[in-house]
Length: 506
Image 1 (cartoon, rainbow, N blue to C red):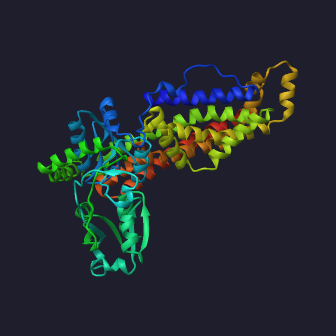
Image 2: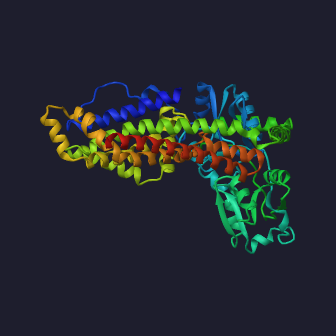
C-alpha cells in the first residue's frame, strides 16, 4: 500500500541516521534524494497571491475539508466496504467540483482542525456546516451563504415541564456544545450563567444528554430536529437568540477572489434550482436507508475499523522496535553528543501528548510531502512508540552484568556479535513485561489518529453513532472489541514470557 511505502522510507531514513550517529562521532552524509522528496508535495498558496484556483485546475482535484459527525450536513456511511462521506455539504462540494471540471477529494477530520488545515494548505475549502462569523472571517474568506438555520436546544422529553423555554439556560442549567463550533460562542455570549460542557462531537453531546449529565445540547435546528426525530426520549425547544443566524458558508484561504467567485457561482446556481432543500431531503433519506434493524448489521463498520487499528498497531510496533533499538544504542554510546541527541528526542516525545504529535506531523509535514492521513498517523505513532521502547531496551541492556560484555570481547567477539549473542538475549527477560505493556498500550493509543480522520475503530464508532443517533451502544461495542484485543494480546505475551523463563531456568 502507498502509505506503507511512505512510512518505511521515512522511518528507515531516521533509523539509519540514528545508527550512524551511535557508531561514530563523525557524521557523514551522502548526497542524494531524501525519502520524503520522492513523494509529491501538496501546494500551499502564498498569502496575497490569487493562485489557488489555478492550482486546483492544474492538480485536477479540489480538496474539501469536513467533519462527518454532523448529520444531515455531513456524515459517513459504508459503501462497497469503504467509508464514504455524504450529506448536504458533500452534494454541494460535488457540484462545485463538477462546475470547476475537477475531481472531488473529501478530507474528513475533527471540526476544530479544519481552519488550521486550511491555513497550512492541507485542504482548499471547508464545507462542514460552518457558520460565517466575524471572528472566523478574520482568518478566512467565506462564500455566499447557502443555508440559514436557527438554533435549538435538544432536551429530554421528561424535562419538558421543567425546561419550558431557553430562559432555563439563561438562569443556569448545564449545556453541552461541540468544540470550536458557533454554538460555543453563542453560549458564552447569551447564556453566561450556564454550566458549559464542551465535547468533541455532536454525538458525544447527545450521549451526555441521554445520560443526564447535561440539561440540553445547543445545535442548528436541522441537526437538533434530526436527533429528536430519531430518539423518542428527546425533544426540541427553540433558542430565542436576539440575533439573526449568519448562515452556513464555505470557508477558503484569504485573498483568493477567483476561487471565491467560482464557489459563489455554484452556490447561486444551486439555490436557483432549489437544490439545497433537495439535497437536505436526500441526506435524510440516506440516513434512513442506511439505518439497520439490528446492531449486528453495523458489524462491517466495526470490522473495517478493527482492521485499520490492527494495521496501525502492528506498524507502530515494528518501526517502534527499530527506532527504539537505535535510540537505545545511542543512549549507551560513549559519544556524549550522540547520547545527548537521543536523550533530547526521547524527552521531547515523552514530554508532549501523542495527540499534539499527531497533529504536528499531519499539519506540519503532510502537505509538504503529500502524505495521506494514514501515513501521517503511522509516522507519528511509530516515532512516539520508539521513544518509549528505547528506554525499555536501554534499561534491559544496562541491567546485564558488564562482565558479560567483557568476557565476550576477551573471546574475540565484536560489538554487534556481543550484543546479538550475549547481551540482548539476557536483557530480553527483563524487558519483555514492559515491552508487552507498550504493545498493549499501542492498540489503545492508535485511537488518537482518529482526530485527523483515519478510519480506525474509534472513528468508525463515531460514524455508527452519527447514523444511528445513538452514542452509548456503539461505545459499548467498541469497548468490548478493544478489551478482547488487549486481553488476547496480554495472554499471548504471558505465554511467551512463561516459556522464555522456563527455557532459562533449565
